[in-house]
Length: 366
Ligand code: SF4
Image: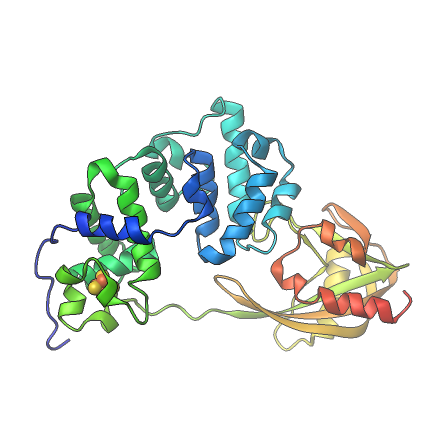
C-alpha cells in the first residue's frame, strides 16, 4: 500500500497515564468487587464473545446460585445449563462445570495458580488463563482479546492481520515488554477497558485517550485502517425442520448428547433439510429416521432465523401428530406441558418460537 507509515519504534512510557485513566474511568462491575479466582474465572468465561451489559445480570444470578467452586461442582449439569440459558455458547458452561468437578475431585478444591496447570482444565485457553491469573494472582502474562489487539495495533502501528498468529506474537511480545510486572492484572484490565470504552472499533475517542500522545494510528491517520483483519470465511446457512409432536396437551422433547454443539440442552426432534427438500417433507423423514415414528405435519407454526458463531439456521417449526411407529430415542426424553418447558434448558433459537407455541396451544385443544 502506498504512503503506509511504519511503526516508529518502541512504546512511550504507557503505564502512568494509562493507570491514571483506569483509576478514574474503570466501570464498577460486579466481578471487580471479587478477588477470588472462582469469581474472576466465571466472569471471564461469561465475557467471552458476550457484551458486558448482557453478562452482568447472568453473573449475579449465577454467583447466587453457585457461590463457590464446590457448589458448582456438586450441581447437576442441567442446573448449570439452566442458569446459563440465553447466554449462548453453552460449551463454556459445560467446560466450566467439568473443570470445577475435576478440581473438586483431584485438586483438593484449589484452582491451579500456574498458567500450565490452569490450562490443563477443560475450556481454559490462553485468554482465560492469562486473564484470571493476572487479575487474580498478579502473574505477568498479557491478555490478548479483541479489544487489546485493536488498541496495540493502533497504538504501535502493527499492520499485520490480527487473525494471524505472527501478528498476535508481535502484540504479545510488545505487551510483555511494556506491562509493569508489579501491576500486571491492572494493566491488562486497563487495556481491555480502554478498548471497550475509548479505542472503539469504528469511532475511537482519541481525544479522551491516555495513549494519544504516542499513538501511531492517531498521528498518521491510520485509525480507520488499523487493525488489519483478513477476510472472514462466509458463514453457511442451514434450513432445519423441527417437529413439535403433541399428545394429550403435552409436547415431546429430548436431551442432546452432552458432547458437541449445544450439548446437554433439550430440543425437539428434527434435522437439516436436504438439498431441494421441502421442510414439511424433511420433518416427516427426520422423525422416521431419528425416532422410528410416522408423523403428520399439521401446521407450520413458525419460521425462525438464528445465528451461531460459525453458521446460521432457519428453523421451520411444525406442529405434528404421531400417526404410527414408535418414539425411540437413545437420549433422555420427556412429554411436557407447554407451561413446563421453562424448567428445561433450551437453545436460544427455540425460545424465539415458544410464545407462538403457547398461543397455538391456547387456541386449540390438544
Ligand atoms: S489514540 Fe485513538 S487510536 Fe490511538 S489508542 Fe487511543 S483511542 Fe486508539
